[in-house]
Amino acid sequence: MRMGSRALVEVEDTGSGIADDVAAEIFKPLYTTKGEAGSGLGLAICKQVVDELEGTITMRSQVAEGSCFTVALPIDEGD
Image (cartoon, rainbow, N blue to C red):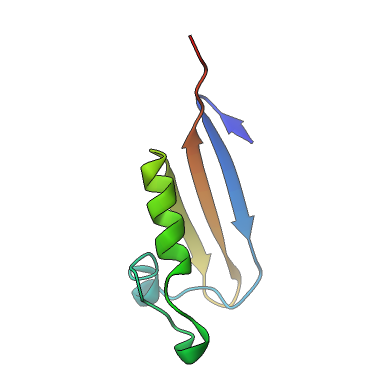
């Protein structure tokens, strides 16, 4: 999807959702709710890459209904 001079990509699921207290932490390096099964690096690395590209990554979620992550990246329209 394209919006103005930004490209938008959304990834949505119908999983268990993310509680507000967890949502405040999810982009921090080494934060995980998966115990030994998670490294806590996935979303932190995604955010770092998006930040370096001067974009944004946001999340909205409803517990027991799912989550949606939106990445917005600038489009170089050229001269």
